[in-house]
Each structure stands twice: as structure tokens, then as C-alpha cells.
Image: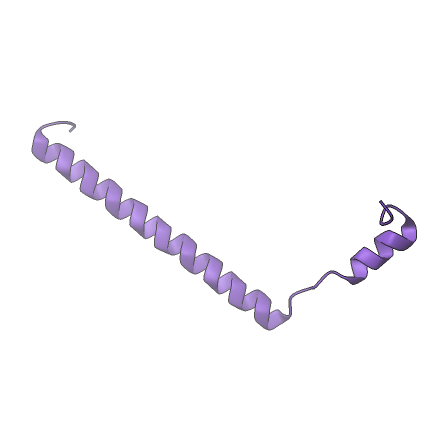
Length: 60
């Protein structure tokens, strides 16, 4: 636990890789794209499930 000192904490902070503006915006676009994909996917599967249940006479 040598990092559990003020000097160790400062050394660990220096090791942190902070993303550049380009990396941050790229990762943000990727994350939002995945979220939108799964929103569309789950909405589509829900609509298909509801319509399938209506064809079977279950649900209203």
C-alpha cells in the first residue's frame, strides 16, 4: 500500500489518462449510437410482441 501516502496519491493522479476533446466526442457519439440502437430494437420487439399477442387473441 505504498500508494496510500500523499506522494503515492500524487503519483497515481499523474498516471491518469485524460481523454482529449476528440476522444471524448468520439466516445460520446459511440455511446449515444448504442443507446439509440437499443431503444429502437426494444421498441420494435415490444411492438412485434404486442401484435403477435393480439393475433393470438391475448391482450387488448
